Length: 401
Image: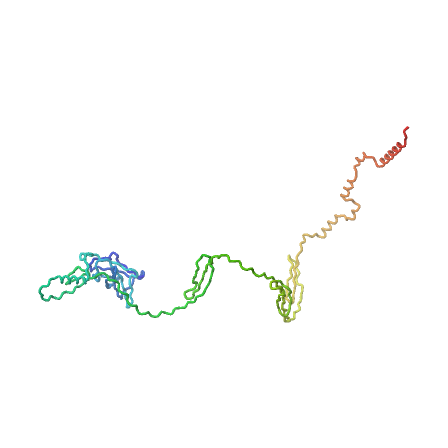
């Protein structure tokens, strides 16, 4: 950005009529001081409404530039705004890029502002003509000298007649804006534009209620559109449709082979039964004669897992066997078995012995001898029974006397 700064901001004002004052500025491109040697320097000044003056810039040895008040001594008291035009050939750079740098012309004893009436040249002439008309006609006098042409004081902008300040301001108020000028000539034709290519890159469904989106994931000449379309609101349930046709059933019938493959429906349209004919495969090409193989037993070892591996070739096999080692902890040595059998008796020699169970049963069927002392023997009872019978017989045969 171009900048224009005061070397001493305190020296931004002077009094009207002071032609010895100097306003000193420094021009910058961003923060770099502008080299102005060999360039045309021109200050342009405006007031609140329009351009009012120009003055040459005086380059100093330190790269700063002066605006001498003697070159702008026509400016009346007020605040003004300045910019610096730096030209080389047909190229002009204006400082600052934005806005202006202000300075102030203060009142002096030579002039006090806002105490002058304003009269245009037309009004001055009309007033003069009226004054002339009011003068009574007298005898013709001698021709007078040519009147002096009114002039405008550069400093006060007042009408001067014969060097006398009339107190009337020569410049009127700004007039209405002029009419627009005619259109300029057509510019040179522009370069042909590049026709872009437009493709749909993606289309995705957005949630209901979201706004539709379209974004370009490509560039200005290769446009790739990513489109987002929101779901529509769910509509009311539609009316029930007419009954559909009876569902189709399908069963597999026969499957045979033939020269040509086919499927035949031997059922109905709604209950189909398919008989399938599969095409016969063509005979393959005869294979090459095989090579007689040999098989031999190689190594036979023991291990935890049984396996057979071929350490030879496909046609000369050598089979190595690994046989699992049995767990011998469940077996006894023959010598230990013989020792245990030596302590045993052959069952055939025990036939004349009773078992403990048999002895217990026999004892259970015997009476204690001490108890038998209170019982009569069977033979004694038999004798006693015979005697009783004889007594009964004898008693029945004795008649009473």
